[in-house]
Length: 396
Length: 119
Image 1 (tube, chains in turn red, cyan):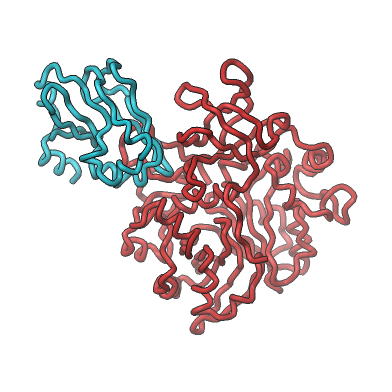
Image 2: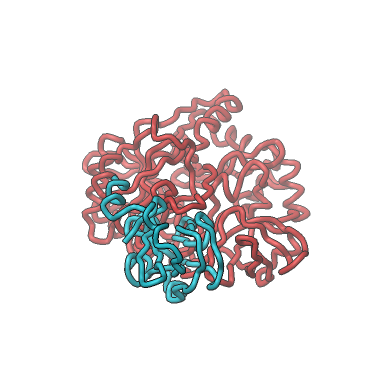
């Protein structure tokens, strides 16, 4: 996903409340998801995002939508994301050539977080990989999907790689998501975090995963575009379900300490520096059954052994002023060293305070360390803290 | 009431002018979570960034609508930024400026002109 520098002038018509993702500033040639008409009917404010015309917020507003999702259940249209099927006799082993993640052990019906790395150990994109029995399903970021497809096709020529272009992708997130989805798709209540399974809804096959991007329990549901609006309406008919736009999607994932590609992680951050070492299983580490063998392995394995030079941390501004992406972090109120910067930041509606993530050298990464963020020429104190800001609520 | 293309309103009260943002602006910004006000007795020039407004997702500025001195600021907004959404054209005024020459307001839009500007 992409840069989203906020407009610094009072031009609210243009400065959409999203720090996320617009690929183009023009309103022309924007793609529409299967739910586009429904978004308009629901009163969404639409913005360009990764080449799509997407809802940034509905009538509840970013704050209301965020809090609704934490308290009840929120429905997100994430159809702009790429869904890619990989088929072949050893698809998992083949895909391991592009990610530092163990996929051979991934059981049918399970999903794992992964990232495509480059030769320098940086991250080309982050993704979910599901073992759906006779094939793998990868879900990739909208802004990266063309590059990801090209990358996979070039490097995995033995696999049949198909972009799924006729299915919408919805997410239902929040403590009431299970009840709301199970009311129309009873089988989903038995799924655990990161399970994937097919479920039937009125003769429509849903590809369901128990996962999401909010820190809450919830599901992502892929289904044919032709049935997507009817299915979305069925979920919205539940009294606990409200539609949620990209604005709250961003504040929810930030509070959950989850990375946004193009902001918190990119081609110069390694998974280790980004604090994603948990996603690199033993089998792919030094001494593991299938150690290395992915782009950038030398650097990534060395960082795993020796520790990274810097790391992604949570930062809590002490005052009320949000510190957003690009804010420079110093180790002193005056003079001192420029340690790094904030990669995602804003107001956390559940935390009821500003929250941010950024990179600092290891010596400054201990929770409780007091640093300074430079805001409009003034250095204001921030404290390094553990992530997430808001406790996650997964059904494990 | 007068209006600017930056979605500010100005209301004359004797020899001062009260400045805030319009309902349209507040609605577009969404939930305001932080307001930074100027120092009083600051001399500003039209177009200077005098206030910072942050909503959940975006930062915006209020620009000085005219030249002059800031004589009063609305400290209530610092403790309760949400007031900007609740009553943007009433209690949630941002600052007051000394109005030396009421003629400078002639260039600004009337309510009808602002409505037309919004389209």
